[in-house]
Amino acid sequence: ICAAIKDIYDDTRSITEPAGALGVAGIKKYVEQRGISGQTLVAIDSGANVNFDRLRHVAERAELGEGREAIIAVTIPEQPGSFKAFCEAIGKRQITEFNYRYHTDREAHIFVGVQTHPENDPRSALIASLTGQGFPVLDLTDNELAKLHIRHMVGGHAER
Image (cartoon, rainbow, N blue to C red; front, side, top):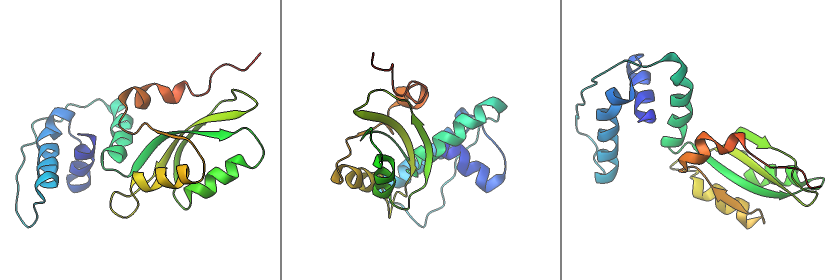
């Protein structure tokens, strides 16, 4: 739905509420599932009652919904050079979010948003690259709890 709100904005420079974008979201899903092209499809935009403070949420979710961002949790060794090795494993992809908090002397748990492209650089390629280089990865892209809360709870308490 957030991706549909963004599409409507990109096309018309107007912002709809989630219920208003439901028709466009449905058409997008229908086209994707059936491989439709070259047809004219119509959706009814039924509302524009959106609070300004919700726009950030919509913008963040639009990237995820269109497969242009992956949200992952990665474990890296807590030692010099680990972050550099992690960045090299990501390659030329853009880091859109990075959260880290010290946990132990042995390993670091990081929460990362990474730019992807659904056709030529999908999320699966990113995860394969990281796991292939020895980084344990947990894909949180489709996890609502992670998107809402885990980014604020990264790490944990320090060892005593």
